[in-house]
Length: 114
Image (tube, rainbow, N blue to C red; front, top):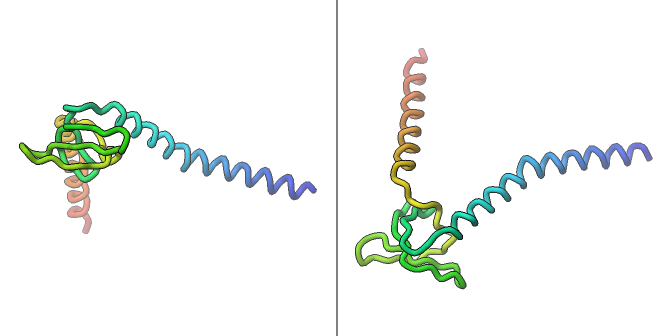
């Protein structure tokens, strides 16, 4: 009987650890994503998951479809879930510079190895 209690305790701890490390962070990220998508309005400049930058022309909440203008007279139809974030050119430039500086640092360490 003691073995069953011990096995149950270990499995409960393992399940709790799995939940804490994998499930809970994904739920938190999903809720944050939903909050961002719900806060979008017509006229916002956005970036899609595909990296396309455009302006929201219309949002059909019932069908989950957004119409995004990516150039003058060019409107594409996207799933609202495919809209990643509001376009912030300074933040995107800062992230790109961080990526470039990381690559440069890697090259330097690779070149210095004998």
